[in-house]
Picture 1 (cartoon, rainbow, N blue to C red):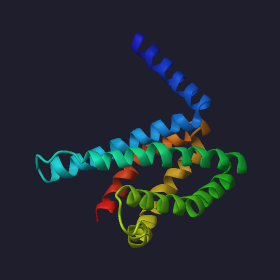
Picture 2: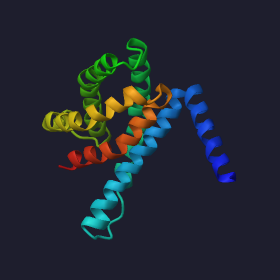
Picture 3: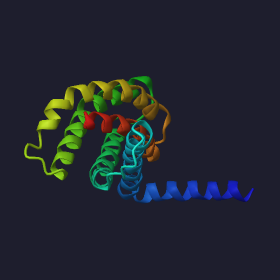
Picture 4: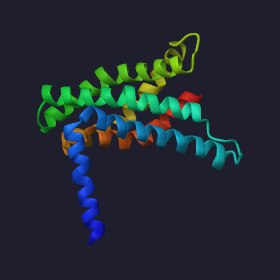
Length: 183
């Protein structure tokens, strides 16, 4: 019984923190999930698939931490608040509008920001090269993954948990992004 009470109290505290500090809370959640996704991707590649004793690349993990907490987390929190104000409700028509608007307005920008910010942190000469090379393939995979995920997000998930839900889905998606980035 004490375990259930603890979980309930943690859930309430988490919700309260997200309501009172949406940008910071969502930045922490999304950044943590980015780090987890990159760490799992490296562990899978280095320890399981290739059976090497090579250590995890902490610099790359650090770049994902920076991207998740200072760039993507705050952008997503701000975007979903804006989108929910512009298109309030959960009717099928509203959910479809949100999905289309999100996928074809915000997502391309976020993918460009991902590739360019990572290239800047990697100190590449041409910070747009990787984006030019990988954008279309990444966007296609993004549509296949995120359109169904966003249907659930916009129809079932309370607004306060949107970035947390996206972050949880992103744990899987970032593994896909990490794979694209490595190609």
